[in-house]
Amino acid sequence: MKRASHFMSLVAFTGFLLLALTFGACKPGYAAGTPMIGNAMAPVHSFTLNDIDGNPLALNTFTGKVLLLVNTASMCGNTPQYEGLQTLYERYREQGLEILAFPANNFGKQEPGTDEEIKSFCYTKYALEFPLFSKISVKGEDMHPLYHYLTTQSPFPGEIEWNFQKFLVNRDGEIIARYRPGLKPLSASIIEDIEQALDKS
Image (tube, rainbow, N blue to C red; front, side, top):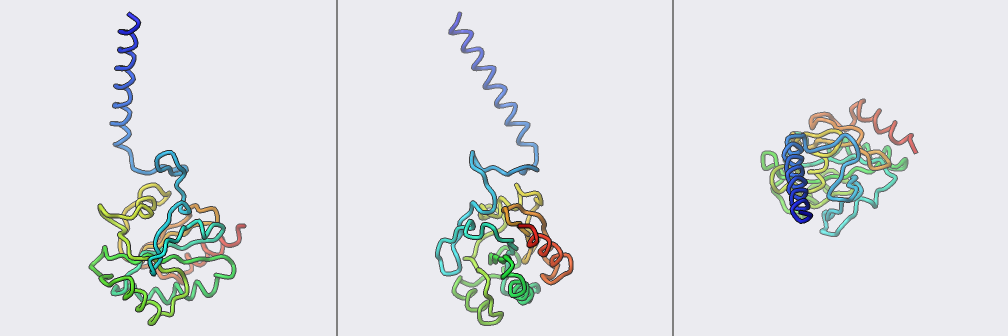
């Protein structure tokens, strides 16, 4: 009888677990609270990506900084935003702003080059000084885990719409704003949000 009772309890628990998973799958793939991956905390700072030279760069290197994350492309109508991003960086880097650029070829095949070609273009044409990363995917089945987090688990979920989508991250690694691709880096709303984030130590 004890063995049968144990078996029935196991069946009941398994059924409950399957039911929970079924209904859980119907909910959006993000939470309003602290995002999780497996059993580990998953803030922006937990990710590591290769820089444009192929060297691993952990984002916890930027702990305590205000971050502006941008997916970029070299042949897009928004590409001149690189200039505004560099201006932002020059203006606020001493106060703790870092701009992290992630080249991606997901939209209109507007970033077809190699990392070396992207690096040459950005540093020659725009004289960028902020960190530039190796090309990744920000959408689709091969999406980088960082962008899976940004688009499904952050407080501002939703697919990346186009090149130069922007996410603002505070000093604690929390995403506090998302800006549409066409909003220029020197727009009043972006500047105001950055200054407020920088003021909070």
